[in-house]
Length: 293
Length: 340
Image (cartoon, each protein chain N blue to C red):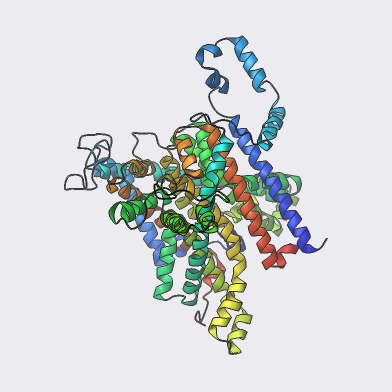
């Protein structure tokens, strides 16, 4: 997914999250995420059956007992969808948080020190950017071997460059502020100056970028699991569940419900990210009058 | 040097640097594989014999320092040697070459559809900003970028093929249809050249389902960007001047607004193409489309590393080339890009 980074960089206004979520669609997004968070936490009590137990007839269409039917080895799809929330969502947050920290650090160092440091770090960023992210993640995850941990490593590795680019542009502007120069003159070392005077003033756009990327992280994680490079059976996982449908086309319920789970979560995170970005971005905040010619 | 020539050569130079960077990454990954490649190649018994292991490492150049190994790797690469598939024992380069045209045809069909629909929807939404149709288009494009393509592929296949029998289900041609003489590798183009119109129709029908599924994500992306860049242009003085002068709305939109909004739209097309290539890897399997994506899916699920690396390399290089073309178009359309 791409983000209009220029808009993020152009707007360095600080903001409060509740005010930023003014738009009703943003609240819809928050609502959906809260519902899924609740399902993830309460899955052991909410789920009607054990997600790992193959107690039912195989490939049973949805009925009164198994509201979403059963999968190819007779497990309850609804229970597996509920438990699936426990891997996808926390892991997506962790991917975004880790790549944000790594990317921002690299970008901030490049922007603050400039010259050769900047050149080297940004060329590395460009190379990672030169791959469509899921493809590079696939290559890395395959090289490391299939597991959720390796999928996490692969996705962090492909996700940090966008933060590095935004952080770099923000820091280049912020380091010229008088208070930063004053801090240096008072004897603060470069790293202290960067950490104490520069970084606190560039965090909001980075957080917005992060919020825009949670949905992408959920999608990419599901994609890796779909390729068999993420969650390992029998762990309940949305992407892996969808891929079981490839071999059982007529049993549409195996894929339909886990896919809907992915879709709702990604839409919700994208709604939140969009409204946060709109509230930061003066060009969309400014109402354009007379849209019709 | 004139600005345009300077711009073009700079872009070319950057693309070559990036391509080398991409090979560095695949090389690093190939050397970072956990589990000893020596043991994997020799089997357990032979790898317990130090003399055999030593001999093997020497034969394969594994005793050389990494920079030397990289040079060997690049030499092989330039000679088209990408290793051998651990599953099928065919050279990876051969597999990639036979699969590439299928994916290229699919991706090009999908991006053309996506550009036409995405730009039209974005323009429409922008011109009707704040009205019902604008909201509807925004929701559709949001769903477009949020939907897992591999899931959509399964549903579309089930609904339009298994249930309704509206569209041909899998592959690039119906069974018993003979592929057209191979010129470009694109069945639609080749059959049209050969004047085999039944084959052309068949190939085009087979494209509809996979290309539409792939296009959806790109449509979402292009709609969002077209909408915002058209909105920005609509606010500019010269558009107001053009309408105030009394030019018909159609002329203003087609000649002034679209031209002004085209630069960001062209820029995002390259990115959309990347997401499309990624989508191909996840969906081709569903449609039994024998392209790079199906190759990647089978290789990934069976951990056939040489093939996975080959796909990564090929897709990375393709993506760089596409973005180079996008940059060049950008430079032609927008003279300001040449000097910055």
